[in-house]
Length: 82
Image 1 (tube, one colour):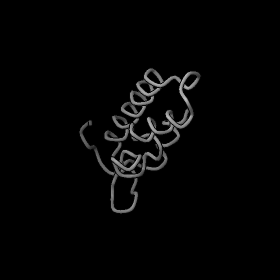
Image 2 (cartoon, helix red, strand yellow):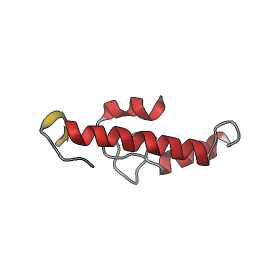
Image 3 (cartoon, rainbow, N blue to C red):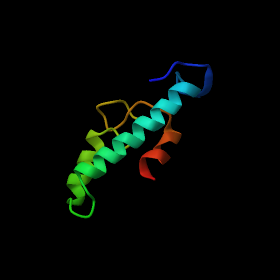
């Protein structure tokens, strides 16, 4: 991730910084690209696709890593589902 430049948002007791958020958005986009390349929705069973999405941390990005998320601000979910 990038260098923290100062708080811009708080979620619970976690502060998300401007530089960290930019790196996180790029990471989410890369994960989405990887997911779609490995599991094309047109040829992947829906359950298998959703399982892969969960494993990639893209199900609910604000959930902790390993629980379907990446531990980032909830508003970044929009980036994961675009």
